[in-house]
Image 1 (cartoon, rainbow, N blue to C red):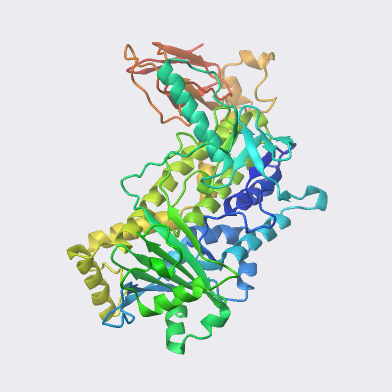
Image 2: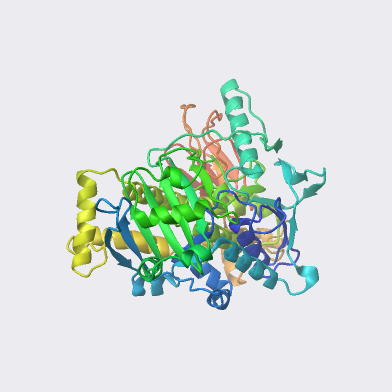
Length: 577
Protein backbone atom coordinates (compact mmCIF):
# COMPACT_ATOMS: atom_id res chain seq x y z
CA UNK A 1 0.00 0.00 0.00
CA UNK A 2 1.49 3.41 -0.93
CA UNK A 3 2.10 5.57 2.12
CA UNK A 4 0.78 9.14 2.23
CA UNK A 5 3.17 10.54 4.81
CA UNK A 6 6.20 8.32 5.45
CA UNK A 7 7.18 7.27 8.93
CA UNK A 8 10.57 8.38 10.22
CA UNK A 9 12.98 5.64 11.32
CA UNK A 10 16.35 6.02 13.00
CA UNK A 11 18.58 2.96 12.62
CA UNK A 12 21.50 2.72 15.03
CA UNK A 13 24.38 0.87 13.39
CA UNK A 14 25.29 0.44 9.71
CA UNK A 15 25.78 -3.29 10.21
CA UNK A 16 24.42 -5.90 7.80
CA UNK A 17 21.18 -5.82 9.81
CA UNK A 18 21.12 -2.02 9.92
CA UNK A 19 21.73 -1.51 6.20
CA UNK A 20 19.27 -4.27 5.28
CA UNK A 21 16.58 -2.72 7.49
CA UNK A 22 17.20 0.63 5.81
CA UNK A 23 16.73 -0.97 2.37
CA UNK A 24 13.50 -2.73 3.34
CA UNK A 25 11.97 0.33 5.00
CA UNK A 26 12.93 2.64 2.13
CA UNK A 27 11.35 0.18 -0.28
CA UNK A 28 8.23 0.42 1.89
CA UNK A 29 8.20 4.18 1.32
CA UNK A 30 9.49 5.48 4.65
CA UNK A 31 12.24 7.92 5.65
CA UNK A 32 15.38 6.39 7.11
CA UNK A 33 18.38 7.81 8.95
CA UNK A 34 21.27 5.41 9.68
CA UNK A 35 23.76 6.40 12.38
CA UNK A 36 27.16 4.66 12.37
CA UNK A 37 30.02 5.24 14.78
CA UNK A 38 32.76 4.13 12.34
CA UNK A 39 34.23 6.55 9.83
CA UNK A 40 33.68 4.15 6.92
CA UNK A 41 31.15 1.46 6.09
CA UNK A 42 32.28 -2.05 6.94
CA UNK A 43 34.51 -1.05 9.83
CA UNK A 44 31.97 -0.76 12.60
CA UNK A 45 31.68 -4.36 13.78
CA UNK A 46 34.31 -6.17 15.80
CA UNK A 47 32.23 -9.34 16.07
CA UNK A 48 32.63 -10.30 12.40
CA UNK A 49 35.23 -13.00 11.75
CA UNK A 50 37.85 -11.35 9.56
CA UNK A 51 37.28 -11.47 5.86
CA UNK A 52 34.25 -13.62 5.11
CA UNK A 53 30.46 -13.50 5.17
CA UNK A 54 28.59 -16.75 4.50
CA UNK A 55 25.05 -16.44 3.18
CA UNK A 56 22.87 -19.59 2.93
CA UNK A 57 19.87 -19.83 0.55
CA UNK A 58 17.32 -18.26 2.92
CA UNK A 59 19.49 -15.14 2.94
CA UNK A 60 20.74 -15.04 -0.65
CA UNK A 61 17.17 -15.12 -2.01
CA UNK A 62 16.53 -11.80 -0.25
CA UNK A 63 19.58 -10.25 -1.90
CA UNK A 64 18.28 -11.48 -5.25
CA UNK A 65 14.80 -10.12 -4.52
CA UNK A 66 16.44 -6.74 -3.91
CA UNK A 67 17.92 -6.82 -7.41
CA UNK A 68 21.50 -7.74 -6.48
CA UNK A 69 21.86 -10.94 -8.54
CA UNK A 70 23.75 -9.23 -11.36
CA UNK A 71 25.94 -7.34 -8.87
CA UNK A 72 26.93 -10.60 -7.18
CA UNK A 73 27.69 -12.23 -10.52
CA UNK A 74 29.79 -9.20 -11.47
CA UNK A 75 32.14 -9.68 -8.50
CA UNK A 76 35.70 -10.56 -9.46
CA UNK A 77 35.34 -14.01 -7.90
CA UNK A 78 32.87 -16.84 -7.84
CA UNK A 79 30.65 -16.21 -4.86
CA UNK A 80 28.43 -19.29 -4.93
CA UNK A 81 29.65 -22.37 -3.06
CA UNK A 82 28.28 -25.61 -4.57
CA UNK A 83 29.53 -27.90 -1.80
CA UNK A 84 31.94 -28.33 1.09
CA UNK A 85 34.49 -30.94 2.05
CA UNK A 86 35.05 -32.40 5.52
CA UNK A 87 38.41 -33.34 7.01
CA UNK A 88 39.82 -34.24 10.41
CA UNK A 89 41.24 -31.25 12.25
CA UNK A 90 44.19 -33.25 13.58
CA UNK A 91 45.17 -34.71 10.20
CA UNK A 92 46.64 -38.21 10.08
CA UNK A 93 49.98 -39.88 10.59
CA UNK A 94 53.08 -38.52 12.29
CA UNK A 95 53.15 -35.48 9.98
CA UNK A 96 49.48 -34.58 10.44
CA UNK A 97 48.72 -34.86 6.74
CA UNK A 98 45.29 -34.06 5.30
CA UNK A 99 42.69 -36.62 6.41
CA UNK A 100 39.75 -36.16 4.04
CA UNK A 101 36.47 -37.73 5.19
CA UNK A 102 34.32 -36.77 2.19
CA UNK A 103 32.19 -34.18 0.44
CA UNK A 104 28.72 -32.73 0.77
CA UNK A 105 27.14 -31.31 -2.39
CA UNK A 106 24.04 -29.20 -2.05
CA UNK A 107 20.82 -30.59 -3.49
CA UNK A 108 19.98 -28.66 -6.67
CA UNK A 109 16.25 -29.35 -6.37
CA UNK A 110 16.26 -28.09 -2.80
CA UNK A 111 18.15 -24.93 -3.78
CA UNK A 112 15.73 -24.33 -6.64
CA UNK A 113 12.75 -24.63 -4.31
CA UNK A 114 14.44 -22.29 -1.84
CA UNK A 115 15.13 -19.73 -4.61
CA UNK A 116 18.65 -19.20 -3.33
CA UNK A 117 22.10 -20.70 -3.02
CA UNK A 118 25.13 -20.63 -0.74
CA UNK A 119 27.31 -17.55 -1.07
CA UNK A 120 30.79 -16.89 0.30
CA UNK A 121 31.43 -13.16 0.13
CA UNK A 122 34.09 -10.88 1.47
CA UNK A 123 32.44 -8.99 4.32
CA UNK A 124 33.25 -5.63 2.77
CA UNK A 125 31.70 -6.77 -0.52
CA UNK A 126 28.45 -7.66 1.24
CA UNK A 127 28.45 -4.22 2.87
CA UNK A 128 29.04 -2.57 -0.51
CA UNK A 129 26.25 -4.62 -2.11
CA UNK A 130 23.79 -3.46 0.53
CA UNK A 131 25.01 0.12 0.22
CA UNK A 132 24.38 -0.09 -3.54
CA UNK A 133 20.90 -1.50 -2.98
CA UNK A 134 20.13 1.28 -0.48
CA UNK A 135 21.13 3.96 -2.99
CA UNK A 136 18.83 2.40 -5.59
CA UNK A 137 15.81 2.72 -3.31
CA UNK A 138 15.82 6.49 -3.78
CA UNK A 139 14.03 8.04 -6.73
CA UNK A 140 15.89 11.33 -6.30
CA UNK A 141 18.77 12.76 -4.23
CA UNK A 142 16.28 14.52 -1.97
CA UNK A 143 14.56 11.19 -1.30
CA UNK A 144 17.75 9.30 -0.46
CA UNK A 145 18.25 7.40 2.76
CA UNK A 146 20.78 9.22 4.91
CA UNK A 147 23.76 7.36 6.36
CA UNK A 148 25.76 9.46 8.81
CA UNK A 149 29.22 8.09 9.52
CA UNK A 150 31.47 8.98 12.42
CA UNK A 151 28.58 9.71 14.80
CA UNK A 152 28.26 7.91 18.13
CA UNK A 153 24.92 7.31 19.82
CA UNK A 154 25.55 7.57 23.55
CA UNK A 155 22.02 7.15 24.92
CA UNK A 156 18.49 6.16 23.99
CA UNK A 157 15.35 7.76 25.39
CA UNK A 158 12.98 4.81 25.21
CA UNK A 159 9.92 6.84 26.24
CA UNK A 160 10.40 9.73 23.84
CA UNK A 161 11.88 7.62 21.02
CA UNK A 162 14.99 9.76 20.69
CA UNK A 163 18.75 9.30 20.55
CA UNK A 164 21.49 11.52 21.90
CA UNK A 165 24.82 11.71 20.09
CA UNK A 166 28.24 12.24 21.64
CA UNK A 167 28.07 15.82 20.35
CA UNK A 168 24.96 16.46 22.44
CA UNK A 169 22.69 16.49 19.39
CA UNK A 170 19.29 14.91 20.04
CA UNK A 171 17.28 13.24 17.27
CA UNK A 172 13.72 11.92 17.43
CA UNK A 173 11.76 9.55 15.21
CA UNK A 174 8.57 7.53 14.97
CA UNK A 175 10.64 4.40 15.68
CA UNK A 176 14.23 3.52 16.53
CA UNK A 177 15.80 0.28 15.31
CA UNK A 178 18.88 -1.13 16.99
CA UNK A 179 21.17 -2.82 14.49
CA UNK A 180 24.29 -2.21 16.56
CA UNK A 181 24.91 -5.75 17.77
CA UNK A 182 24.81 -7.59 21.10
CA UNK A 183 27.03 -5.01 22.84
CA UNK A 184 25.28 -2.01 21.32
CA UNK A 185 23.60 0.89 23.08
CA UNK A 186 20.07 -0.10 22.05
CA UNK A 187 20.20 -3.64 23.44
CA UNK A 188 21.79 -2.34 26.64
CA UNK A 189 18.99 0.20 27.05
CA UNK A 190 16.38 -2.55 26.73
CA UNK A 191 18.27 -4.71 29.25
CA UNK A 192 18.37 -1.84 31.74
CA UNK A 193 14.64 -1.31 31.27
CA UNK A 194 13.98 -5.00 31.97
CA UNK A 195 16.19 -5.01 35.05
CA UNK A 196 14.43 -1.94 36.44
CA UNK A 197 11.03 -3.57 35.93
CA UNK A 198 12.21 -6.70 37.76
CA UNK A 199 13.41 -4.61 40.70
CA UNK A 200 10.06 -2.83 40.80
CA UNK A 201 8.20 -6.13 40.79
CA UNK A 202 10.30 -7.43 43.67
CA UNK A 203 9.67 -4.26 45.65
CA UNK A 204 5.97 -4.21 44.76
CA UNK A 205 6.27 -0.95 42.84
CA UNK A 206 5.03 -0.70 39.26
CA UNK A 207 5.50 2.02 36.71
CA UNK A 208 3.23 2.87 33.84
CA UNK A 209 6.26 3.10 31.58
CA UNK A 210 9.62 1.52 32.10
CA UNK A 211 11.42 3.60 29.51
CA UNK A 212 14.15 6.08 30.31
CA UNK A 213 17.26 7.52 28.84
CA UNK A 214 20.01 4.96 29.19
CA UNK A 215 23.67 5.11 28.28
CA UNK A 216 26.04 2.45 27.10
CA UNK A 217 27.41 1.70 30.56
CA UNK A 218 24.93 -1.11 31.22
CA UNK A 219 26.50 -4.49 31.74
CA UNK A 220 25.00 -7.48 29.93
CA UNK A 221 24.43 -10.40 32.25
CA UNK A 222 25.70 -13.63 30.80
CA UNK A 223 24.23 -17.03 31.33
CA UNK A 224 25.37 -20.14 29.47
CA UNK A 225 22.33 -21.96 28.14
CA UNK A 226 22.25 -25.73 27.90
CA UNK A 227 22.96 -25.89 24.16
CA UNK A 228 25.62 -23.18 24.03
CA UNK A 229 29.20 -24.43 23.87
CA UNK A 230 31.64 -21.73 24.93
CA UNK A 231 34.65 -21.33 22.67
CA UNK A 232 37.04 -18.74 21.31
CA UNK A 233 37.04 -17.79 17.65
CA UNK A 234 40.37 -16.99 15.99
CA UNK A 235 39.79 -15.53 12.53
CA UNK A 236 42.14 -14.21 9.89
CA UNK A 237 42.86 -13.69 6.22
CA UNK A 238 45.66 -15.26 4.19
CA UNK A 239 46.76 -12.56 1.72
CA UNK A 240 47.14 -13.03 -2.02
CA UNK A 241 50.93 -13.30 -2.01
CA UNK A 242 50.83 -16.19 0.45
CA UNK A 243 47.98 -17.99 -1.33
CA UNK A 244 50.21 -17.99 -4.42
CA UNK A 245 52.74 -20.11 -2.50
CA UNK A 246 50.31 -23.03 -2.16
CA UNK A 247 50.81 -26.04 -4.38
CA UNK A 248 48.20 -26.67 -7.06
CA UNK A 249 46.93 -29.70 -5.16
CA UNK A 250 46.65 -27.85 -1.86
CA UNK A 251 44.94 -24.85 -3.45
CA UNK A 252 42.41 -27.04 -5.26
CA UNK A 253 41.51 -28.65 -1.93
CA UNK A 254 40.33 -25.23 -0.75
CA UNK A 255 38.73 -24.05 -4.01
CA UNK A 256 37.05 -27.04 -5.67
CA UNK A 257 34.22 -27.36 -3.15
CA UNK A 258 33.72 -23.81 -1.92
CA UNK A 259 35.03 -24.38 1.59
CA UNK A 260 36.56 -26.97 3.89
CA UNK A 261 35.21 -27.80 7.35
CA UNK A 262 37.65 -29.40 9.78
CA UNK A 263 36.13 -31.54 12.54
CA UNK A 264 38.25 -32.21 15.62
CA UNK A 265 38.46 -33.09 19.29
CA UNK A 266 36.88 -30.02 20.94
CA UNK A 267 38.26 -27.92 18.07
CA UNK A 268 37.13 -27.03 14.57
CA UNK A 269 38.06 -24.81 11.65
CA UNK A 270 36.52 -23.45 8.47
CA UNK A 271 38.57 -22.46 5.41
CA UNK A 272 37.00 -20.44 2.60
CA UNK A 273 38.60 -19.32 -0.65
CA UNK A 274 37.31 -15.87 -1.61
CA UNK A 275 38.62 -14.07 -4.66
CA UNK A 276 42.40 -14.43 -4.40
CA UNK A 277 42.48 -14.69 -0.60
CA UNK A 278 41.70 -17.39 1.95
CA UNK A 279 39.60 -16.72 5.03
CA UNK A 280 40.17 -18.94 8.06
CA UNK A 281 38.27 -19.28 11.32
CA UNK A 282 39.39 -21.57 14.13
CA UNK A 283 37.17 -22.55 17.06
CA UNK A 284 39.26 -23.34 20.11
CA UNK A 285 38.65 -23.93 23.83
CA UNK A 286 41.89 -22.05 24.60
CA UNK A 287 41.02 -18.57 25.89
CA UNK A 288 42.54 -15.33 24.70
CA UNK A 289 45.70 -16.66 23.07
CA UNK A 290 48.00 -14.03 21.51
CA UNK A 291 47.70 -15.46 17.99
CA UNK A 292 45.84 -18.00 15.89
CA UNK A 293 48.85 -20.32 15.85
CA UNK A 294 49.01 -20.34 19.64
CA UNK A 295 45.43 -21.65 19.83
CA UNK A 296 45.76 -24.59 17.43
CA UNK A 297 46.51 -27.28 20.00
CA UNK A 298 49.16 -30.01 19.96
CA UNK A 299 47.81 -31.74 16.87
CA UNK A 300 46.64 -29.84 13.83
CA UNK A 301 46.49 -30.49 10.10
CA UNK A 302 49.81 -29.31 8.62
CA UNK A 303 48.14 -27.27 5.91
CA UNK A 304 45.92 -25.57 8.48
CA UNK A 305 48.94 -24.70 10.61
CA UNK A 306 50.58 -23.02 7.63
CA UNK A 307 47.46 -20.99 6.85
CA UNK A 308 47.31 -19.87 10.48
CA UNK A 309 50.92 -18.67 10.37
CA UNK A 310 50.27 -16.62 7.24
CA UNK A 311 47.08 -15.13 8.70
CA UNK A 312 48.97 -14.19 11.88
CA UNK A 313 51.54 -12.31 9.78
CA UNK A 314 48.90 -10.32 7.86
CA UNK A 315 49.29 -6.71 9.02
CA UNK A 316 46.73 -5.32 6.55
CA UNK A 317 43.94 -7.45 8.04
CA UNK A 318 45.18 -8.56 11.48
CA UNK A 319 43.54 -11.56 13.14
CA UNK A 320 40.37 -11.07 15.17
CA UNK A 321 40.28 -12.99 18.47
CA UNK A 322 37.01 -13.10 20.39
CA UNK A 323 35.11 -15.19 22.89
CA UNK A 324 31.81 -16.61 21.68
CA UNK A 325 29.59 -15.50 24.54
CA UNK A 326 26.14 -16.72 25.43
CA UNK A 327 23.83 -13.78 26.06
CA UNK A 328 20.63 -13.82 28.08
CA UNK A 329 17.65 -13.58 25.78
CA UNK A 330 15.79 -10.29 25.99
CA UNK A 331 12.34 -10.56 27.56
CA UNK A 332 11.16 -8.27 24.80
CA UNK A 333 12.83 -7.01 21.64
CA UNK A 334 10.53 -3.98 21.93
CA UNK A 335 10.69 -1.22 24.52
CA UNK A 336 7.84 -0.55 26.96
CA UNK A 337 6.93 2.47 24.86
CA UNK A 338 6.53 0.19 21.84
CA UNK A 339 8.69 2.40 19.63
CA UNK A 340 12.23 1.06 20.02
CA UNK A 341 13.19 -2.37 18.70
CA UNK A 342 16.30 -4.45 18.05
CA UNK A 343 16.98 -6.82 15.18
CA UNK A 344 19.80 -9.00 13.88
CA UNK A 345 22.59 -9.70 16.36
CA UNK A 346 21.19 -7.08 18.73
CA UNK A 347 18.02 -9.17 19.09
CA UNK A 348 19.32 -12.72 18.77
CA UNK A 349 23.12 -13.07 19.05
CA UNK A 350 24.53 -16.15 17.29
CA UNK A 351 27.75 -18.02 18.09
CA UNK A 352 30.70 -16.58 16.20
CA UNK A 353 31.23 -18.08 12.74
CA UNK A 354 27.62 -19.26 12.50
CA UNK A 355 26.31 -19.92 9.01
CA UNK A 356 22.97 -18.20 9.64
CA UNK A 357 24.08 -14.93 11.28
CA UNK A 358 23.64 -12.68 8.25
CA UNK A 359 20.75 -14.63 6.73
CA UNK A 360 18.65 -14.11 9.86
CA UNK A 361 19.51 -10.40 9.84
CA UNK A 362 18.30 -10.20 6.23
CA UNK A 363 15.12 -12.10 7.15
CA UNK A 364 14.43 -9.72 10.04
CA UNK A 365 14.79 -6.74 7.74
CA UNK A 366 12.65 -8.15 4.93
CA UNK A 367 9.84 -8.97 7.39
CA UNK A 368 10.00 -5.55 9.01
CA UNK A 369 9.93 -3.72 5.69
CA UNK A 370 7.01 -5.77 4.44
CA UNK A 371 4.70 -5.14 7.38
CA UNK A 372 5.53 -1.44 7.44
CA UNK A 373 4.62 -1.20 3.77
CA UNK A 374 1.02 -1.34 5.01
CA UNK A 375 0.94 1.73 7.23
CA UNK A 376 1.93 5.36 7.58
CA UNK A 377 0.20 5.71 10.96
CA UNK A 378 2.69 6.37 13.79
CA UNK A 379 0.16 5.18 16.38
CA UNK A 380 0.42 1.67 14.91
CA UNK A 381 4.19 1.41 15.35
CA UNK A 382 3.95 -0.54 18.65
CA UNK A 383 1.51 -3.05 17.17
CA UNK A 384 3.75 -3.66 14.16
CA UNK A 385 6.90 -4.01 16.26
CA UNK A 386 5.22 -6.50 18.59
CA UNK A 387 4.10 -8.48 15.54
CA UNK A 388 7.70 -8.45 14.31
CA UNK A 389 8.96 -10.13 17.48
CA UNK A 390 5.98 -12.48 17.69
CA UNK A 391 6.75 -13.91 14.25
CA UNK A 392 10.54 -13.67 14.14
CA UNK A 393 11.56 -14.82 17.62
CA UNK A 394 10.37 -18.46 17.31
CA UNK A 395 12.20 -18.86 14.01
CA UNK A 396 15.47 -17.32 15.16
CA UNK A 397 15.34 -19.44 18.34
CA UNK A 398 14.90 -22.56 16.22
CA UNK A 399 17.83 -21.64 13.97
CA UNK A 400 20.01 -20.76 16.96
CA UNK A 401 19.35 -24.22 18.38
CA UNK A 402 20.41 -25.79 15.07
CA UNK A 403 23.61 -23.71 14.98
CA UNK A 404 24.51 -24.71 18.53
CA UNK A 405 23.97 -28.39 17.78
CA UNK A 406 26.05 -28.18 14.60
CA UNK A 407 28.96 -26.62 16.49
CA UNK A 408 28.69 -29.28 19.20
CA UNK A 409 28.86 -32.02 16.56
CA UNK A 410 31.77 -30.43 14.74
CA UNK A 411 33.79 -30.20 17.97
CA UNK A 412 32.66 -33.55 19.38
CA UNK A 413 35.20 -35.03 21.80
CA UNK A 414 36.96 -38.15 20.62
CA UNK A 415 35.10 -41.29 21.61
CA UNK A 416 32.54 -43.82 20.46
CA UNK A 417 30.02 -41.31 19.10
CA UNK A 418 32.74 -39.38 17.25
CA UNK A 419 34.09 -42.62 15.75
CA UNK A 420 30.62 -43.58 14.54
CA UNK A 421 30.13 -40.16 12.96
CA UNK A 422 33.47 -40.22 11.17
CA UNK A 423 32.87 -43.82 10.10
CA UNK A 424 29.58 -42.84 8.48
CA UNK A 425 31.26 -39.96 6.65
CA UNK A 426 34.02 -42.21 5.31
CA UNK A 427 31.63 -45.01 4.32
CA UNK A 428 29.39 -42.63 2.40
CA UNK A 429 32.43 -41.11 0.69
CA UNK A 430 33.69 -44.56 -0.34
CA UNK A 431 30.27 -45.27 -1.87
CA UNK A 432 30.29 -42.00 -3.80
CA UNK A 433 27.59 -40.43 -1.62
CA UNK A 434 27.34 -37.19 0.31
CA UNK A 435 28.80 -37.54 3.78
CA UNK A 436 25.46 -36.62 5.37
CA UNK A 437 23.50 -39.12 3.28
CA UNK A 438 21.07 -41.03 5.50
CA UNK A 439 19.10 -42.86 2.79
CA UNK A 440 19.60 -46.18 4.59
CA UNK A 441 17.81 -44.67 7.58
CA UNK A 442 14.60 -43.24 6.06
CA UNK A 443 13.23 -41.76 9.27
CA UNK A 444 16.42 -39.84 10.02
CA UNK A 445 16.81 -38.83 6.39
CA UNK A 446 13.27 -37.46 6.27
CA UNK A 447 13.78 -35.55 9.51
CA UNK A 448 17.00 -33.97 8.21
CA UNK A 449 15.37 -32.94 4.94
CA UNK A 450 12.36 -31.50 6.75
CA UNK A 451 14.59 -29.41 9.00
CA UNK A 452 16.68 -28.22 6.06
CA UNK A 453 13.64 -27.22 4.03
CA UNK A 454 12.13 -25.43 7.02
CA UNK A 455 15.26 -23.30 7.24
CA UNK A 456 15.90 -22.63 3.54
CA UNK A 457 12.34 -22.38 2.17
CA UNK A 458 11.20 -19.70 4.61
CA UNK A 459 9.90 -16.51 2.99
CA UNK A 460 9.90 -13.57 5.42
CA UNK A 461 7.63 -11.47 3.23
CA UNK A 462 5.07 -14.29 3.09
CA UNK A 463 5.26 -14.54 6.88
CA UNK A 464 4.63 -10.81 7.14
CA UNK A 465 1.73 -11.03 4.70
CA UNK A 466 0.18 -13.79 6.79
CA UNK A 467 0.19 -11.52 9.84
CA UNK A 468 -1.25 -8.66 7.82
CA UNK A 469 -4.07 -10.73 6.34
CA UNK A 470 -5.01 -12.37 9.65
CA UNK A 471 -4.60 -9.38 11.95
CA UNK A 472 -3.05 -6.19 10.72
CA UNK A 473 -5.45 -5.23 7.96
CA UNK A 474 -8.44 -5.30 10.32
CA UNK A 475 -7.08 -2.25 12.12
CA UNK A 476 -6.65 -0.21 8.99
CA UNK A 477 -9.96 1.64 8.95
CA UNK A 478 -10.81 4.36 6.50
CA UNK A 479 -13.19 7.20 7.47
CA UNK A 480 -15.92 5.73 5.27
CA UNK A 481 -15.71 2.43 7.11
CA UNK A 482 -15.55 3.72 10.68
CA UNK A 483 -17.48 6.85 11.57
CA UNK A 484 -18.17 8.00 15.08
CA UNK A 485 -21.39 9.97 14.69
CA UNK A 486 -23.01 9.00 11.41
CA UNK A 487 -26.17 7.05 10.81
CA UNK A 488 -23.98 4.07 9.89
CA UNK A 489 -23.56 3.40 13.60
CA UNK A 490 -27.16 2.28 13.78
CA UNK A 491 -27.13 -0.01 10.79
CA UNK A 492 -27.41 -3.68 11.49
CA UNK A 493 -25.01 -6.26 10.16
CA UNK A 494 -27.18 -7.05 7.13
CA UNK A 495 -27.09 -3.40 6.10
CA UNK A 496 -23.31 -3.38 6.37
CA UNK A 497 -23.04 -6.37 4.08
CA UNK A 498 -25.61 -4.92 1.66
CA UNK A 499 -23.54 -1.80 1.10
CA UNK A 500 -20.28 -3.75 0.80
CA UNK A 501 -18.65 -2.48 4.00
CA UNK A 502 -18.21 -5.37 6.37
CA UNK A 503 -17.89 -5.23 10.14
CA UNK A 504 -14.15 -5.75 10.50
CA UNK A 505 -12.55 -7.97 13.12
CA UNK A 506 -9.79 -6.31 15.08
CA UNK A 507 -7.09 -7.83 17.26
CA UNK A 508 -6.94 -6.55 20.79
CA UNK A 509 -4.62 -7.31 23.66
CA UNK A 510 -6.32 -7.61 27.02
CA UNK A 511 -5.82 -8.85 30.57
CA UNK A 512 -7.04 -12.36 31.23
CA UNK A 513 -8.70 -13.39 34.47
CA UNK A 514 -6.89 -15.95 36.57
CA UNK A 515 -9.74 -16.25 39.04
CA UNK A 516 -8.50 -16.10 42.59
CA UNK A 517 -4.98 -17.14 41.69
CA UNK A 518 -2.96 -13.94 41.74
CA UNK A 519 0.39 -15.67 41.46
CA UNK A 520 0.07 -16.84 37.88
CA UNK A 521 2.02 -15.12 35.15
CA UNK A 522 2.32 -15.42 31.41
CA UNK A 523 5.14 -13.71 29.52
CA UNK A 524 4.03 -14.86 26.09
CA UNK A 525 2.58 -11.49 25.09
CA UNK A 526 4.98 -9.30 23.13
CA UNK A 527 4.85 -6.67 25.85
CA UNK A 528 6.56 -9.05 28.23
CA UNK A 529 4.03 -8.22 30.96
CA UNK A 530 3.07 -10.76 33.57
CA UNK A 531 4.56 -11.00 37.02
CA UNK A 532 2.86 -9.12 39.80
CA UNK A 533 -0.27 -8.09 37.92
CA UNK A 534 -3.48 -7.53 39.83
CA UNK A 535 -6.18 -9.84 38.49
CA UNK A 536 -9.84 -9.15 37.91
CA UNK A 537 -12.61 -11.61 37.24
CA UNK A 538 -14.10 -11.38 34.75
CA UNK A 539 -12.52 -8.76 32.44
CA UNK A 540 -14.62 -6.78 29.98
CA UNK A 541 -13.11 -4.72 27.18
CA UNK A 542 -14.62 -2.79 24.31
CA UNK A 543 -13.37 -3.69 20.86
CA UNK A 544 -11.32 -0.90 19.33
CA UNK A 545 -8.57 -0.44 16.82
CA UNK A 546 -5.94 0.38 19.43
CA UNK A 547 -3.24 -1.85 20.89
CA UNK A 548 -3.59 -2.13 24.65
CA UNK A 549 -0.49 -2.92 26.65
CA UNK A 550 -0.94 -4.33 30.12
CA UNK A 551 1.15 -5.64 32.96
CA UNK A 552 -1.37 -8.46 33.15
CA UNK A 553 -1.21 -11.69 31.16
CA UNK A 554 -2.69 -11.10 27.76
CA UNK A 555 -4.06 -12.89 24.75
CA UNK A 556 -4.85 -11.81 21.22
CA UNK A 557 -8.35 -12.39 19.89
CA UNK A 558 -10.56 -11.17 17.07
CA UNK A 559 -13.84 -9.39 17.77
CA UNK A 560 -16.34 -7.45 15.70
CA UNK A 561 -16.70 -3.73 16.12
CA UNK A 562 -19.68 -2.98 18.33
CA UNK A 563 -19.21 -6.16 20.37
CA UNK A 564 -17.99 -6.55 23.89
CA UNK A 565 -15.81 -9.44 24.97
CA UNK A 566 -16.26 -10.92 28.41
CA UNK A 567 -13.33 -13.09 29.40
CA UNK A 568 -13.78 -15.58 32.21
CA UNK A 569 -11.41 -18.20 33.57
CA UNK A 570 -13.08 -21.12 31.85
CA UNK A 571 -14.87 -19.78 28.81
CA UNK A 572 -15.28 -16.84 26.50
CA UNK A 573 -18.68 -15.20 25.95
CA UNK A 574 -19.61 -12.95 23.07
CA UNK A 575 -22.18 -10.32 23.99
CA UNK A 576 -23.97 -8.14 21.49
CA UNK A 577 -24.06 -4.54 22.70
